[in-house]
Image (cartoon, rainbow, N blue to C red; front, top):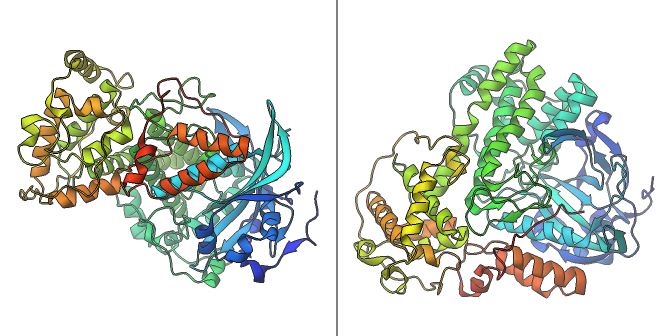
Amino acid sequence: MTDLSANRSSAESAGWNLDHSYARLPQSLYSSISPIPVAQPQAVLLNDKLAEDLGLHPDWLHSEEAAQVFGGNQLPEGSNPLAQAYAGHQFGGFARLGDGRAVLLGEQLTPSGRRLDVQLKGSGRTPFSRGGDGRAALGPMLREYIISEAMHALNIPTTRSLAVVATGEDIQRQTPLPGAVLTRIAASHLRVGTFQYALQWGGLDTLRALADYAIDRHYPEIRHVSAEAARQTLTEPAPEIPQSQADESTAEASDSQGEESTTEAAVRDRLNPADQAAGVTGGEPYALLLRSVMERQAALVAQWMLVGFIHGVMNTDNVTISGETIDYGPCAFMDAYDPATVFSSIDTGGRYAYGNQPYITLWNLSRLAETMIPLLDEDADRGMAIAEEMLGGFERLYLDNWFDGMRAKLGLSNREEEDEKLIADLLDLMKAFRADYTNTFVGLTFGIPTGADAVAGGLPAGEGDAGTGANPGADNVARAVDTAAQAQPGEAGNAELDFAGIAAAEGEAERGSSADLAEAAPAYRPANFPGADALLASGEYRVWREQWRARLERQADSPAEVRERMRAHNPAVIPRNHRVEEALAAAAQSGDYAPLHRLLAVLARPYDHSADQADYAQLSPDADSGYQTFCGT
């Protein structure tokens, strides 16, 4: 084991304020180990804004000492590094895992009162390496930086990337590749697989200690719920616990997740196992924990689906208790809408396809529920019944999040029962035309139907002639849509909707009056919508668009309000696969980081809808060539 105890950076000059609450858990859940030094650490990417939020000093961030810390050659002052143990169902098969190439440096207590894990990924072998070298290649670490920061900009809960350091060493894969270390920031690295490991290899007491820790770190409001309120919450459908009342959870992952004003001392005290507040007792806190994790995961996966994100490796060790997205190995964003889309080279059966992600999330949560049965009730049968009843609520949670998100993408501010068919019909058209998912919704954003123009001929006046002509393939497309509509669940069309057989939404909101539909054109309007123009020019779309127009008429919002809602929920840009590959190739193979920095700058403002984003909305010339991703090693 490498001893770096005498080689530490200064807390005063750097801004480190580390604590180690995880290390107070049973030792079976981790192994104390230092990162293994590398030859020539050189920072190639640094996240200045995130560093500022963490309380790290900007001058130090760009120093040689920082490169030594982020490369694993020095430890921050106050660090007691460890590798975490966990298990996981990988493509359905259970395995004993753990941090095989990662080390947790500690938990940074930030100026705003958050507690955030600081982890080095690619930092060398650990007791959990299982024969691996513990290292990471530069390309996959840059990829995680790009995608995680893009997800953050999209307001999707995610781990963050603070730094990528090139190691000056090659690692051996199929060919020699330049090595790197990523510094990952997370609300925590607690996973469903951590719970599985705790029960299997630590026992019930270890599982209970871990569950108590998860409550105190991520869902402290559970401690203050009365027994009566807990029983009501667990027996009746209840609204999601507001994120603003939750933990120091996501590292600014979403604007909807408010910051706590908790002081650093309070954060430390909260995670002292000897100081538990009085509140619900017995199995109720753990039932509330299970429900809370389920709520966050339902919301998270709905957000993935709304932007066309495909995780690619939804094993139980990649499902966080905090509700953050983690592990960006074989992930990618969908171009042409198709629920069967798979990018991962190892997902040959399509287990983690785009349309399967809600199902797999429920499957993973079922594994968590199974693990927690002994905590839910001393009687196994009663514990099982509680778990099954809890899991039965997932479908509604997911669909409420997804349908509300789709309504926002269409500019709708209230709920009507007919919305679900309106959404389903649009997705059927998108699938039949192989329309680009992102650009279709951008096209809708800039083509809000105003008055009678939808009947008269497609897009509003001034948006070109694409909507006025007949579509030569209209008959074929119509037949394709009819076929999709008659298909069995899982065979075609809308796997998201198949999840509940296009279940009816609960509670139709009061309908508003029609508003004046005259408005000025926006300052910037894209010249075209790559991959979506054929759909937007079709007769089938014009029929659907008239239904959308009628629906917009039934709410009180002005066209300006509708457009702003759509602009805020329909990104102009996503990390297009060919753009990501272009940036990675230039950086990892040629040392040219200019394309990567340009890409990061564009992805940091996905909802700007500005002229400088137009090139990044274009499709790859090889869009239909079968793009594949690979687990980052």
